[in-house]
Image 1: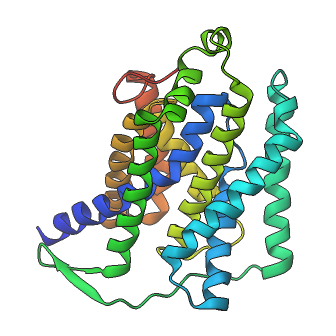
Image 2: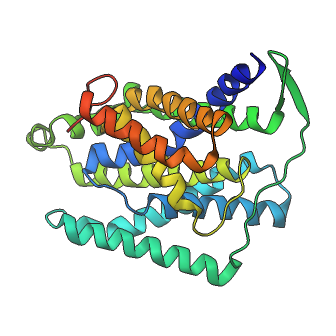
Length: 285
């Protein structure tokens, strides 16, 4: 029973982090129809930015998450304005450009920081949840991810700009007819998506150890959440985050951490076979 409770508590705490991990990817995919192959690189940039800023300043890593958003979001805006906006009709070129950007980021980190694994060490102690000791830093990470994810959903659903971004997903042509500048919205969506990737990397830096190549494993989880939740469906993504967290935690506890990617792959295949539009059936195919 204690092991089952451990799995449930760990899964709930991880679910919010996984949701934040996939949120930026889902927004970019939904609005721009761009599969961001550089998502892992942007995550790892956020993680390293938090690590080095924390080491240099001693500021709270949770405050530094917002710095990550500015830095990585700014780089995302430069990448979109400088190149991606000109590749609308060339998805293959865009794919190779993003893969190339990812390779440059990883190589730069290796050159500057080396290949050692790092983490932001926080010693806030533990608290009991259902009789189980849980690190306070994990609870704070859960809270930060929940607040950022919830704030993003609120802005998309209840603000004028957010509704316009959602309208781009539903019907870009009608938006043109109404005289709305969808190019600015596309830039905003890509910037917000990459900023959220940076924030997710900052949160992960306090949660796990990471190295220059760790972005790929994080990106695999993010892609799995997006596929399970339905392409472009953010609410479905929230539910999918909990499912993925439950599966990965269960496999790690009851079998072996070496089988997590296999279990995730099988889960994605099954969902694509039975519910290709995602858990709620509202995603794009």
